[in-house]
Image (cartoon, rainbow, N blue to C red; front, side, top):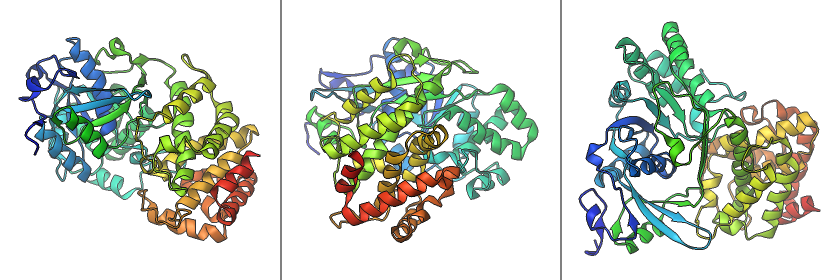
Amino acid sequence: MNKQLLPLNQSSLEFIQIGVLKPNYIRSNLSAGIVHIGVGNFHRAHLSWYLHRLMQKNLAKDWAILGSGITEYDVNMRESLQHQDFLTTLIELDPEGNQSCEIVGPMIDYIPVEKGNHKLINAMSDSKIKIVSLTVTEGGYFLDENGGFDLKHPDIIHDINNPDIPKTVFGVMVSALKNRKENDVGPFTGLSCDNLIQNGNKLKQAVTGIAKEQNQNLSEWINENCTFPNAMVDCIVPRTGEVEINIVKKLGIEDLVPVSHENFRQWVIEDKFCKGRPPWDKVGVQFSDNVHGYEDQKIRILNGGHQILANAAELLNIETVRDAMKNKTIVNLLEKIEKEEIIPHINPVPGYTPLEYYELIAARFSNPSIQDTIRRVAFDGSSRHAGFLVPSIKDGIKNSISINGLSLAEALWARMCEGTREDGSTIEPNDPNWEKLNTCAKKSRENPLKWLEQIEIYGDSSKDEKLKVYFSKWLKMIYEQGVEKTISEYLK
């Protein structure tokens, strides 16, 4: 290791150079009030950052975070963060090329990841824990084709039948709530930080769905006492690579897991916290009874927009979102679909009109300082298309508004899932359901309608004749004439 580098940890903080913002609070005086499941980059640049801001103001000292998780990823993250006393360097990158770094420290421990999740259940059962928050991705909520909770999934069946050794985060939460009820500790708030429409409602249906199958009284107690606020989260946070690690190294810091992010954040939450909450409103969090309006705008325009450009860019072997935004064909595709087929379904909310919000996200996508990869954005399309684009398709069918461009977006995704780019290079598996998608995509080359038979993604919209006609036309054209010619045909 370069002798000039300071390994990031509590002891080295005082030696880190001026110019890097550091915690001004004494971390040993913090006490935990939140267990967070899924300590990825987004959590550390978002919920953790907002708490850090409060702590810098000498507030929320009893709302520190215990990190947690249940996957192999979480095992590795725990090891990396434990090595540096659970500190993280955040790198803010603005469109002008300016960068600033700060070290955040609201996380004070990381619960060991183990089979059966006993330590995690015990931590959540502690009376000091008032919020259990989570970022487990859109695909982690076990949703069926109608958006309901899939009680037939093998992991859910396991948790229902084995409440003491649950596999899923929802089974863990139910087991902890059972302990809290029996020990008269009281409820906690379940706070989803994932990109899902009505994410709080979906978290509640998962928790109560398992609880009801285990014990009717427990389910009723959860319904009557726990709260699950809906929330909209918004900040572009790329995966960490050598670029981010080297930025921190240039500052003389060795951070194993730094996080870069854009210079924009928004968090809108329903103010429903059964055991209290940090005063997040003091650091820019918006509390609103109309979270659905904000999340609908963000998920359809930003997250849906990501899918539109990412699948086309992947096929053209474009590596980053910022480079995709330099391709006029892709930009024009994005703009036309957004303005004609997505924005018409969105009701305005305070702050930005839907059109203004689109213009904002187009600028954010173009940020030359953010190295957000197409592969990250295109990951888990089976959940993201279902959650981000299909709602606009359904609304278009219902309201007799064009779905021509959205059909093209779905055709581009189907072509991407075939597994090769236009230059012949291989697209590596990039979805939890990749094998199924890949098989379906190959069949769809000869019979495009095979793709729309994925009811878990398209639901009843797969029966719509216009969708069938448009999708078949575009997929055949993509294979026969290529991506850019097909998009140009749509743009005429």
